[in-house]
Length: 166
Length: 210
Image (cartoon, rainbow over all chains, first blue to last red; front, side, top):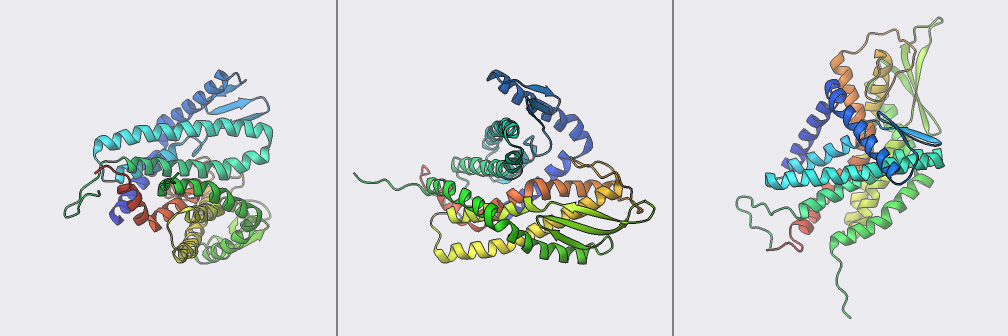
């Protein structure tokens, strides 16, 4: 378990150090954030909402948000990736988990962005509370649930001298 | 009709639906100011010990803290920089941890109390460290006068030498972790650490095909 926590910490730290490098932010994270904003805008338009999208800014009548760090789901995805990559499971299973987990985190994050946009149009104080406290916690809990579900269905790993769980 | 026992995982989920909102409400309505007071003690000491060359101390004004820095603004007459800090976000770590511990099924009362007390003490230490990283970042931001991550400095220039590019970048990474990620992630990690045996039992044995 200690080995897992250390490996998890190392992968997470390396991930954060790389993702915040200026070229990575400019050429990878920036366009990705704009993409997330586009998807959120397209979903609002699909449901009949009036919306304007420009780069990482999303606006509806009465309110606008700028999608920045943490709001783009990159930090949360890194936490999930580190948790899965550090765990001793077969690579095929890890890759499946990374793909499904990332999809889940971003689907919830897009829902978060849309809900915050409408909440902001309704009440700025509520927006602040949900944005700064509640939704961040929900996203982290989502990662925990996804990770535990992934563990639940992970093929059992047999360590030397340890019987497989029945 | 016989009642099927709920799986511990489902019980954890259902109990979390009760305990997490309850702890968040308790925190927001009654405990946040008290937690801020406790954190203030640690951070004020930390500022005194670790940032003595850059700050005189910390003042608490309701839910906002003022950092009285010893760095002089490039103005005539000279006056020191005072930074406003918003520490409330950091306190959300506590209700999340309490909610998870209270929601965990199968813990003896004493074990649950020990987790709550020791876990809160550990979180206090950790959150104090996160706040100190945040304070150091805010100082660096104003010293270097360059936007970093999603934060921008005030327009006041300071009479001091800037941080090197590498140190400034690492402080930015520290800020992202300390402000954006750790306040909601640390309580989950701590809960996992305390309950990993229980989780291992549930997830690696219960209901798994032989």
